Image 1 (cartoon, rainbow, N blue to C red):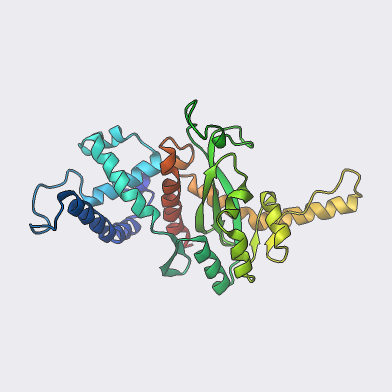
Image 2 (cartoon, rainbow, N blue to C red):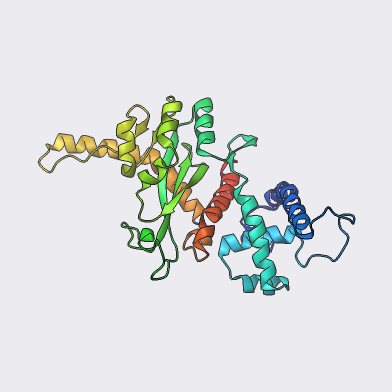
Length: 298
C-alpha cells in the first residue's frame, strides 16, 4: 500500500512526510496517554503491548483513504485490524497533515499556514497571486436540522461546500481555506478571512481573479484584476472585439489556478465528499498541502 499508485506520493516524499509527522504524532500521543492515566509515564517508551497499526502504516492508510475514499471496513480488512483502528488512525494523522501548511517553491524550509503568510510571501518575492473559488459536493443535513438550506449551491443546484484556493502564476498552490457552505458567495467567504485588510496592508501585492470577485477588483483597482465587463448588445463591433481580446488575455493568465483546483480533485475525497461535513475543511487542507509539496518542485 506504500506504492505511489495508492498514496499519491513518491517513496522519497513519503519517507520525508513520515519523518516530518513522527515528532508531532508522538507528542500528541504522549499527551493523550498522560491525560488518560493522570500521571507521567512510569515505564520506558516502547514497553507494553504493541500496536495493531504502527505509525508508518497509520500515515499510509490515511493517505490511501484521502486518495480513494475507501470505506474504513475495507482498509481494516486489508491491514488485518478492526475498523475502529483505521478510523482512529485517520483521525490522528489527518489533523497533522492539515497543520503542515503549504510548500513554497524553491524554499524547502518555508511553509505558509495563513492567508497573511501568503501575502507577506508575495510582497517579499514579488509574486502575483491567482484567486479562485471551488466547490465540492457534500451530504446535505437531514430534514429538520439547522443549516439545511445553507449547503444548496445556486450555481450547481447541489449540496456543496466552497473553498478558496490561492496560487502563484505557475499554478502552484500557496493556500486553501475560507471554507463555507455552498450558498455563500465566493467573495463573501473570502472577505470573512480579512482579505480587504491584507490588500491594504500589502499594497504591492497584485492578484488576478474571476468575475465572482468583481467587487474586490472595484475596491482595489490597482491591485486586483477581474475580467472586463461585457459590452451592451448594441455596442459597436470594435468595442466587442476589444472586450473579447482582453477577456481571453485575462483568462489565459488566470487559468493556472483552475489547473490547481483540478489537481486537488484528482484525490477522490474532493470529487464528492462522503465523510462528515465537520471534517471537510481539515480534509481539503490536508490534500491541498500534499499537492503543494509536489507542485513546489515544478
